[in-house]
Image (cartoon, rainbow, N blue to C red):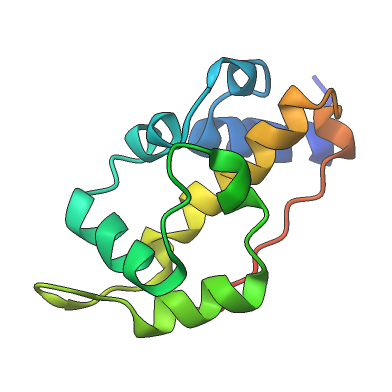
Length: 117
C-alpha cells in the first residue's frame, strides 16, 4: 500500500483536530474550546489580553498573529503564566473550521502555526 505524504499529514491533523467533515458541525467557540478541553481560567487569562470573541469562533480565526503571540506572552493564570500551546490549538481549529465551512477543500487549506514556543 502506498501512502502519500499529504495523506499522512491529513491523518495526523485529523487525530488532533478531528476530520475535515466534522469541522462543519462546530457552531460556536465553546465547541472548539470543548474539543481541546481548555480550562476556563486559561481561556479567561487569554481573553484578558485580547478581549472576548463571545461565542463567534470567526473572531478568533481572524485574530492577527501578533495579537495571539502577545496575548500568550502576557497572559497569566492563578498558577502563573501559560504557554502558547494552551491557546494556539483553539485558534488553529477556528481557522480550520472556518475554511471547512467555507467549502475550502482540506488539501487546499494551509495551516499556519504562528507562535514559537
